[in-house]
Length: 111
Image (tube, rainbow, N blue to C red; front, side, top):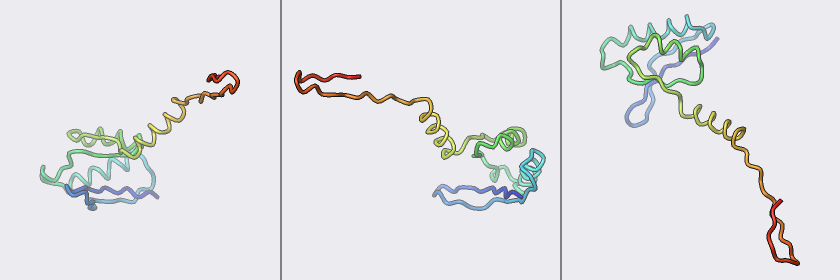
């Protein structure tokens, strides 16, 4: 059973609970149901979120794009940073150059 928690953030970086639901599985039907129920409770336009931040769960990202049409969806900076670091480690490896000093000739040579 998964806990799906929706929180908001104030201008002073304080978080508050908007809603939560226990789901039997992370399926599109369950995510859709939770978001539609949340929208029913947020009746006025001023209560509607402007931005939704998600992790890399593609099922949730697809549902947010279909249910919350007028709301911008972005990825969490923690998950973006983790993915960038993982790519940098694998794609940007640099082979270190070994520098030896030839004492007799006083020259630097690289291998």
